[in-house]
Length: 149
Image (cartoon, rainbow, N blue to C red; front, side, top):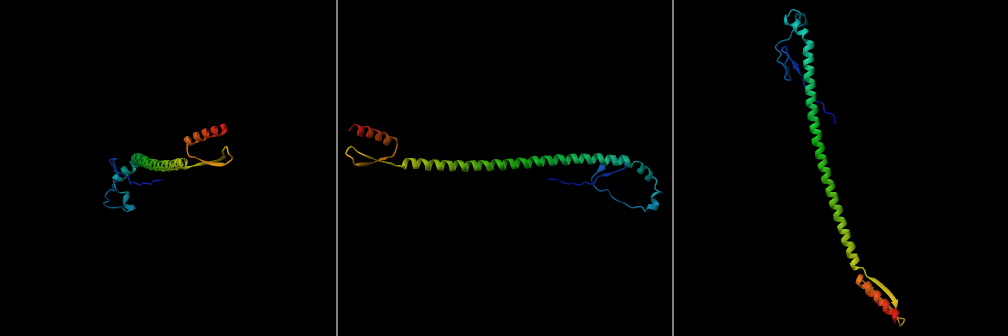
């Protein structure tokens, strides 16, 4: 982002720099300019006055640059806070989804039945529903018993 700021600077004969426009009392036609006494002295001071105005201009530039840095830091901080808030919300949403999926998965595990069909000792098909680990242990016990028959 580029910011352009213009400031008018005016240097008086006593070498003070002001940003307010001086009061113009009268103008001189070029033919009368040579007859004014203080004009030669003013012309000889022109380089010094210009240098003074340039130094003040650099002070103004540094001040504007400092303001721009502070504004950029403030904007960066705001963007950082917005990004942090956004990602916290995203993380919370994904954590909620994960909890939902885990709860569904746990429900499926508890509701899932395993049906095992095998022949008993007399040759008949027997269906055994297996729901959880205790059922699996019972199945293994039933197997051992059926093998011993």
